[in-house]
Length: 199
Image (tube, rainbow, N blue to C red; front, side, top):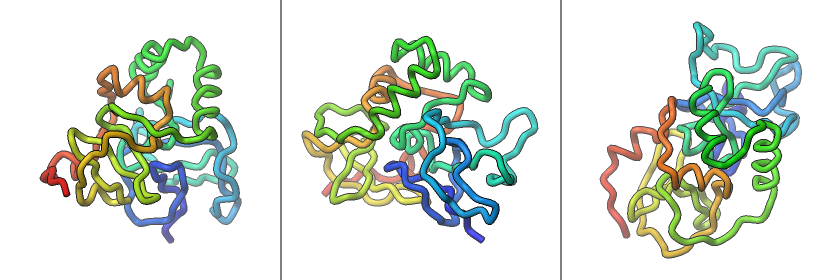
């Protein structure tokens, strides 16, 4: 059975077979039958390694525990409003905190939560790795093009507009502008290998 625990850049939970390269959670979202009952439980939305200290994410929905979520890559997790885990990605977490000028995880989580729920804005000069909304679909900003996000990778490209409605939270845009390079795959290989044609 395909579980509803794959996350789109819009933060939605979908049931698709593709698993992705980044793991995470936002509390316990499932019931005893492994059905999703709420979009989040806590404001601490984290992005983790798929494997850490011998722990492999074999059962993403253990009874009564957090719901394991899967993201195509870290750019997707960032767009959805997640940030690096302080346990399995301590160096990434510390760097993220330093870039955005926060000292306490609770303060960062509150800030990101407000941005996740707030209105989306049209912006210009977005950094690579940001996501924008075009025709109600998420597109990745990469160089002079946008790449359409799918659960299994990035599809066709199109010319990057001067301004676009931004999905990635404002705080995370600061991190991307600082030249982020973390411990988990930032972009799925389909973004790197795909010819960057525009139309």
